[in-house]
Image (cartoon, rainbow, N blue to C red; front, side, top):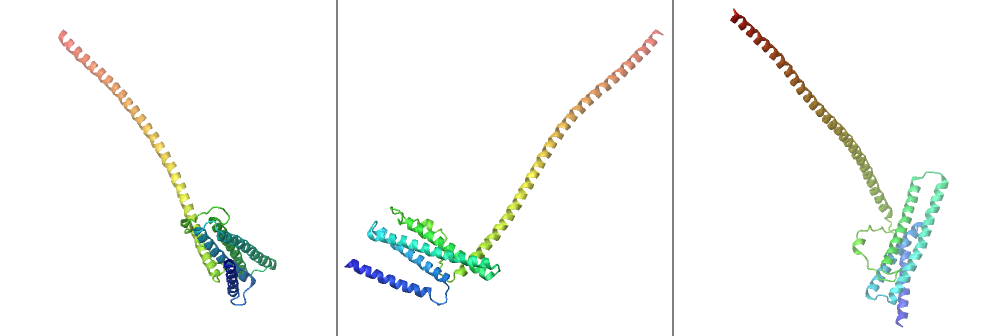
Amino acid sequence: MNNLLKRVDKIKKETVDANDKNKQLNADGTTDAFTLLRRKIGLDIKGIRELIKERDEAESSMPGSVRTVDLSHRIRTAIQEIKTETQKLQRMYEKAQDRYNKKNKENPEKLKDIELKKEICELAWAHIKELEDQNRKRGGETSNFIPRDHQSSSTVKQLPDIDNDDFKELIRNDKQIDNVLDRIQENLKVTENIATELGKAAKRQGVMMDNLNDKADDLDTKLENINIRLAKMIKDVRKADRFLIDVILICVLLGIGGFIYSRVRK
């Protein structure tokens, strides 16, 4: 009886949730099919996150219980359904892209809308991958309970909700940030090129300094050799001068001796 009541409450809750979802999707009544599907996928993503949270709590309190298995099955089924819906969203974008290409007319507004649809599809697939990763971490597709790494999850950039009507503003802000980052990257490249050129110039100057040092060493060696040769030449010249002086002195002595001898004989 209790199980029957639980199933009735579950069906009632799902019916109410479906009605609320339809009200949210058709809030203005003039929304195009792509936006409706985008909003539905966004709401489904939030629903799957709630299921994962509920399954994690059940796994923490009663690991391996029937409720945990049932929630895991519902999560896998919901992820598969949202994949199918995202594939439809992808086909809508591709058809819009094909129609734009066939017209061969440039329309900036239409092109921006197509680019936005492309980014929405990429974001939807990113959400699906994140859901699959979260599901695996808590035993959704594995048999073991794997604790979630709170430290690593806090460092991951949170994906924006695709059911938010301010999504265009978010994309615009992201593009502005990307443009700023691109300019910073370009400036860094310029700085890198300047640093590279400075490094090359410093290397060339280093080679020139090495050449100057080598030439200075050669000059020192030559000067030393010249000094040695000059010292030798001066020494040789000094020897010749002393020889001449000695000859002159001998001649003077001989003259004096001859003079004295001639005086003595007289």
